[in-house]
Amino acid sequence: LHTVIGDNCLLMASSHVAHDCKIGNNVILANYVGIAGHAVVEDFVTFGGTCVVHQFVHVGAHAFVGAHSMVDGDVIPYGMALGNRARLAGLNLVGLKRRKFDRDDIHALRTAYRMIFSSEGTLRERVADASEMFQDNELVQRVVSFINNARGRSFCLPRNGTNGA
Image (cartoon, rainbow, N blue to C red; front, side, top):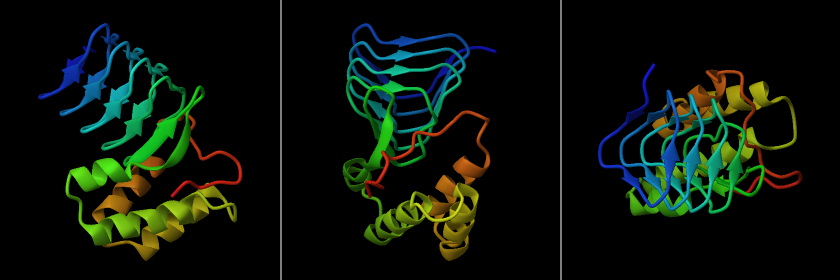
């Protein structure tokens, strides 16, 4: 395997992408971001300064990782992860609006996010419910597919008692 960095990426001072990583297009790594080996970062992801990403982590498209975060679990597409041992803090609504995502799609994504990360039932049941309810919504189906096709790593989840949407 080889490290691959997509088109139109911005890697700021002292950022590091390790061996065998796949970095998508239009990714921003602010100063001192470190991406460990075998990580996958999809398109349009933004990392704040001094973030680190654990090996084998998968960060979904259009996600945002806040400054000083340590990401040791997969981050769903369109998610916003924050903190040392990063947790989901909701959706990257600012990024979605800046990229001119449709308002109805954002609303559907927020509703699905709340369904998936609620406290009732298993994660698989909640994902299946969201998939069924939003079967025609591409954004929701991308999140559903990301969760269903996980590579065995844990996910960044919301902090207990919050779903952040």
